[in-house]
Length: 88
Image 1 (cartoon, helix red, strand yellow):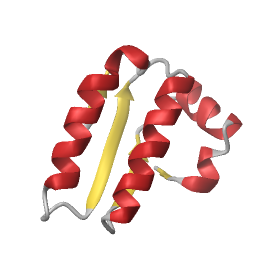
Image 2 (image 1 turned 90 degrees about the vertical axis):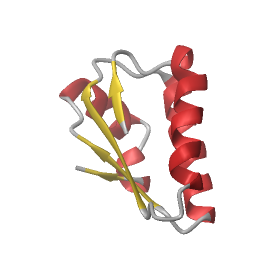
Image 3 (image 1 turned 30 degrees about the horizontal axis):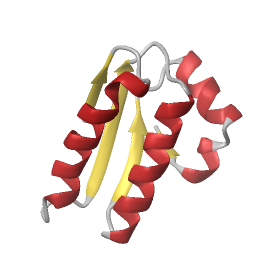
């Protein structure tokens, strides 16, 4: 999944729909979220990622966060996501 632009509450519906398609696909074992084009994330985005991680775990799917810029990585580290997620 490639995110583009600010990752905040405004993307909630689109993010949920796209992630549900990946969760529903039995061939998908690993969900990779690409943050290369994301300049900013807010707390609602953190919540969306946590929910997706929980839902993926229930279906025995892995979740990885990729290509985080320094600002996004700093938010993840502040929220201790680096301990809960694989961040590449």
